[in-house]
Image 1: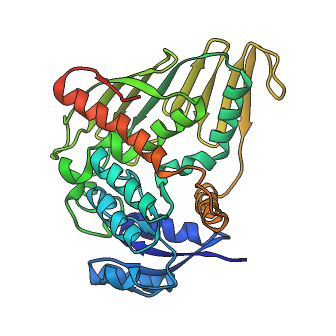
Image 2: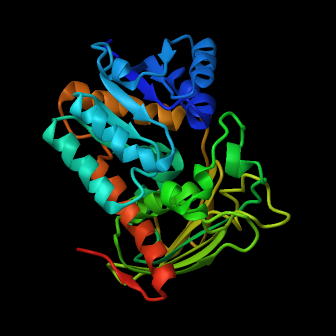
Length: 355
């Protein structure tokens, strides 16, 4: 079975604690090379995962056995490095967000298109979570009626060390503290996944965004608390409420409980994402669900299975000469909502999104 061969650009926290382990369960992908500007980081990755790693990006992009790249660098470098890779003829996956500005996102999308390579943004990996797929099935079946609203809530209490070293302190850096380099705080760093998931599950696009945010409890430029109001194309409303410096919260947050996570309200029922469970209430006769009551659906699977599926399906798209399930355009649509939220908070007025 053919495998898509990846070069990793950026070998810091995400690449070390997540991507390398995901590739351990992939069937259609493999890592063949890595690059990081910090020699010690490159060396430690090579020692851990057994692939050649260095500090020369051009060397990795020149390798004939590198079919595609994963860009896992500070946010502001995602688009520029993705563009370099695309020009070298490599397919591109970028960690979230795909860029910090819509202009950079558009440039990355156009460069990939011009060089006939595929592009995807990794927050869309939640597409393959069984909870996401089952929720979408429930919405499409009409089990909750017409979508009236969505809620995204979450709280964390990030340690001071996070801002200069992430959760692992693997790389010492200050980009997370900078609005220009990160694109933003808790919203873009952590809840971009949830915004994409709600777009995908409901099948609805956001048409208007209003936000308020501030930095209350952290010595950084980016927000540590944000509240966003969304208006969807069908008239549904949505809310996002998230904070990264809330005393009493877990340091990395809790996503997926009955009181913190994602919820969809419909005219005939509702859906609650609760960790490895999905809770569905419906007033209707729907196969597999209990009428006028809650149905609890529990899912099995390994920690990395959904993202292994994401990479494998991307590889299959390359081999079959088709668009990926979640192309770069989807990353751009999600980013547009986040950029609008930050602009709204800056100007104190709602932002209407382009059609």
